[in-house]
Image (tube, rainbow, N blue to C red; front, side, top):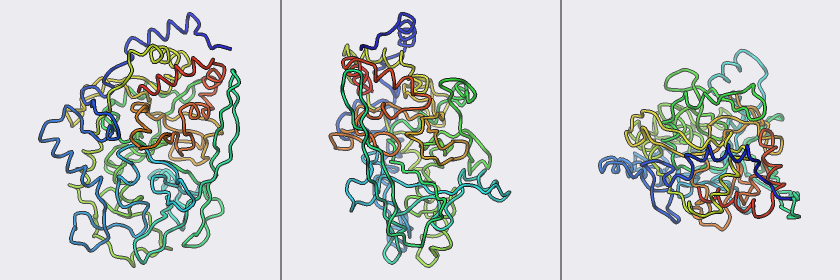
Length: 459
């Protein structure tokens, strides 16, 4: 059967459509670059001097870090336990990561978070306030499957899949991959028997500074945790610099408050590199990391952390394509009528930011940056600050049509763990608050589904 827009839904869609189909989703920062490097361009409205700052940050983001001591003392201190030796190793061409392709691959651009349930003690409650999770006691908060020479990797990440079929109304059958995680070759003994795992691919880097520049009040107006149907919830996380709890914006569960802290956390967890915000890496006492060389107390200087943060704030969003395509226009009306914009909020105007390039920009990220219950199928069953094991932050959709192109593959990896290889698969994994919308997609005719996908690929 065909999915038809009712008159009321169509009017609502057209009303919301008044600000739709923007050619420049990143406002004046938007780049016209296409192809494999579409995610690696600086904000177009940066001055010449600020473009130099962008290039400096790009160097520290892209080039490998090395073990200490080294002649390149600005980029030493790697390890001893790590997932990659460069930020670009996870964020491929500043785009999204992927699960390991073969059994012999390191996970690299997919991380595995580790934690255990809280026992409710006052000490653990205080730790939860600051860190959001209770780390696994031997392996810490993240599994590192690589190590510097002489050190032992924590383990080997293995992903296998079972498939199940979903039948659509027109008889089309779609195979969905259900990932199964196992950790082998453990380097430091057994994991805690109650260990909670969460596999997460690296997300795209574009437009992050614009998301940071959205006024908190514009996000919290949609914070409705006790509502019915779609009820977004703000995560509240610890800001290491301000020493207080604030709104979370970044990470798959909105577990980090700012790009600076997100970057510092990645340096510590992914590469074993310390900074003023994370004075220790993810090593535990059982791993005796003090036996290995380090690059000093602050292996990432304040200047380098500033440079990498500036770079990550000013990666431009590419311009949309196919705006005049009738299928794209019809697909957007379907997107709105389905209620997808209840989580994937189309647009904001950014507030005043330290960077003039990011200030007062009309942007179209298609996210509310809030937590939503996505159902049991996508649940990792691992809480993080206020986020439950079924909740995920709404990911931005801008740049979606470039995902495979940037990754240099025919099919990209979608959702938090990369299980979906097509946008239709990603939609069919939606549950929880998105269950009604998913069922409407299942009921659609093939032409309407194609229009919906055409819209998403235009972003």
